[in-house]
Amino acid sequence: MSESMRGTIGKFALLSMTFAAVFNVRNIVNNNIELGLSSAPIFLFATLVYFIPFVFIIAEFVSANKNSESGMYDWIKQPLGTKAAYMGSFLYWFVNLFWFISLLPNVIAYASYAMLGYEYAFSPMVTSMISIVLFAAATHISTKGASWLGKISEIVAYGVFALFAVYVIGALMALNGDTPPVEPITLEAMTPTINWATLGIMCWIFQAAGGAETAAAYLNDVKGGQKSFIKVIIAAGVIIGSMYAIGSLLVNVFVARNDLTYSGGMVEIFTGMAHYFGLSAPLVGRFVGIILFIAMFGAMMMWTAAPVKIHFSEIPKGVYGEKTTQLNKHGVPVRAAWWQFGFVLVMLIANGFGSESVQEMMSTAINLTAGTAMLPPIFIMVAYFVFRLKHDDTPRDFRMGSRMFGMGMVSVLIVIFIVSMTASAFPPGVDLVKAFFINVFMTAVFAGLAYLWISRFEKKAATTSTSTSTSTSTSTSTSTSTKNKTATQTH
View 1 (tube, rainbow, N blue to C red):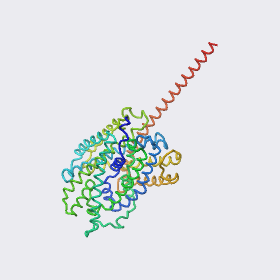
View 2: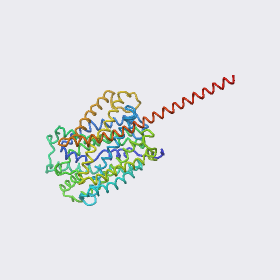
View 3: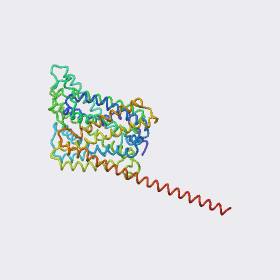
View 4: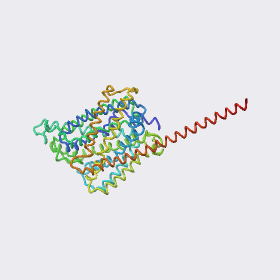
């Protein structure tokens, strides 16, 4: 890998890449549909209790692993060992295979708004075919490295920042006018109902606030190295968390919660604002559709590249084929990226034939990620706890407080995550057997296969090491015996 191709992106490019990977405007609408205005304080809670501490954890791991290519594998390896590091990075990659299937229909929906001014209802099969073309394009671009992604992400960041600012300013102007918001912003409306369903939905809010670990895959591409990375990642955590909380508070100023849809919700709130200010709703819808299409496609490129780098770039040599893990001059395992495309291709075709509607297709994909989405962060958190417990003397420039504070903070996060993940896997009102099969059994099967794969590799590596050691020992003994015999004959 050519070092001249690395260290090429600046702080704003990294901030943009983190923003593109983490901040997804559809999360504001989706969680508003589920929770109403109470999603605002929950987003604020997730930012303060999870996102910012998790960013600090990432910053500390980065500081302790300055030469890491992708982050996650090395973070877990020192505290928990090779096997756990492999499992953590595998699950991180595996979860995203299903996430692509839920994201791609949204990309197509926003493209439809951009071109037609409304969402055109394609059949599941046609949606799958278009998704395959889009994902192939995203895969190709993602192999071009951080400099390409940085430029694209900067465009995405400018567009989404501007879109968000326009909506916030418009909503505040409306609140200061004579017309009350469609749904009043009151303390009662913002007070969440704490029950099993809410705990399950919080899982998705945590996931919405997550993703900062993807930026660690580009640590070696940042000008200024790990010190610049830490500053940017912390700033990104504060900015993104604030935007989620503010956006969730103002989302129902122009459009009621019950009138929003999952696929077109962001366009709907802007067309609602257009009606309020007497602007052309179709024109505004097209404009918003263009920006959101670019934003979604940019996020998809980040998520196409990062999990592949995290899983395939630092695992031990020999776990997969040499060409599969070989990095190009940009530090990207190209063949692994196209293997990922192959897996998603098969899943998209299966979903296209097996679903009666795009909504059902998305629902299936979302359900398949529910049981696994929180597992990779839990691996990182457990690794951090053990890291502070047993390896706190590791040299690093950044620490999240004292040893006991760090261990206490991450312990609270682990408990919250386990409860939320369980509630998400077994939501109220569903067939428990079906939920177990989709959210637990299937995850356990693939995780079990991955465990057997890495166990087989470790056993093979240990046997090879023993054979090499025995061969070396025998060779040394033979050489010594020959020397002694020669010395005796000479004497």
